[in-house]
Image (cartoon, rainbow, N blue to C red; front, top):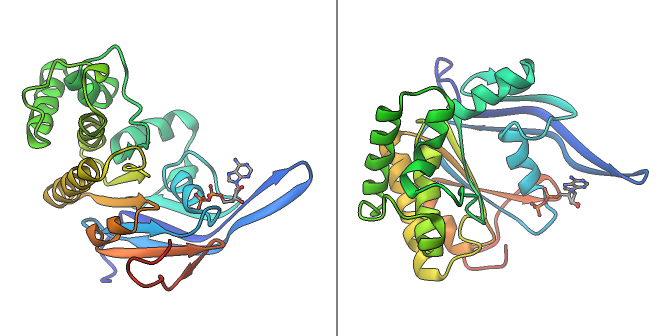
Amino acid sequence: MPPHVTPALELRAVSKAYRIGGRRTDVLVDFDFSMDAGEFVVVTGPSGAGKSTLLHLAGGLDAPDRGTVAVAGRDVWSVGAGARAAFRRRNLGFVFQFFNLVPMLSAVENVSLPLVLDGVPARSADARGVELLERVGLGDHLRHRPAELSGGQMQRVAVARALAARPSIVLADEPTGNLDSHSSTEVLDLLRSLADEEHTAVVLVTHDRDAVRYGTRELHLVDGRTRPSTAPGGEV
Ligand code: ADP
């Protein structure tokens, strides 16, 4: 990688352990990872391998015990909580397994919410919301509330919301875990094509081996370490 390119996400010598009742679990030890804008990394591995921990660290939701986590060249933990929250709103998008849409808001209000919270004028936030919903094929569902949408449609709204602020990186945690296979394909196709168009990096954590083909790279974790993946179609 040329030295002038700032990675979208960089973890350097990151260690993270959890302690419960005096017992300590080392999840990541001296973990290094770097990805550029435009990359789509699919994180696979058995349950307990550290996939969610990696995502939480990358998203600034959880602090490393040691090492640094930088998003778009900025150390997420070098600033206070307020600045970190603002930085996360502008630079990180999230897609969750259970959609996490606001039930009382319409589809377009859900998508534009990160922009409104960041002080973007209502008119332009709304225009960005409409544009993204049209791009995910929901231009005729702008005023529907989440309860009036199918699971696949809700996840398309969530994908649109994750990209609303033109973040450096989108973190997706099992986004197809609650969808049928048709909706899963649709959501992953949209996430990949929108991320390509917007030049946004994506980290996708999944148990779904079919999702690996959407990635530009697979990161297979076992016990907090990167391992060569099993054969395509094998158990993750
Ligand atoms: P994966 O997402 O690959 O299933 P996780 O990152 O969720 O793995 O978990 C890795 C290990 O860390 C597991 O042993 C899990 O029990 C432990 N762990 C994760 N989060 C916590 C937490 N908040 N408190 C205590 N232990 C945790």
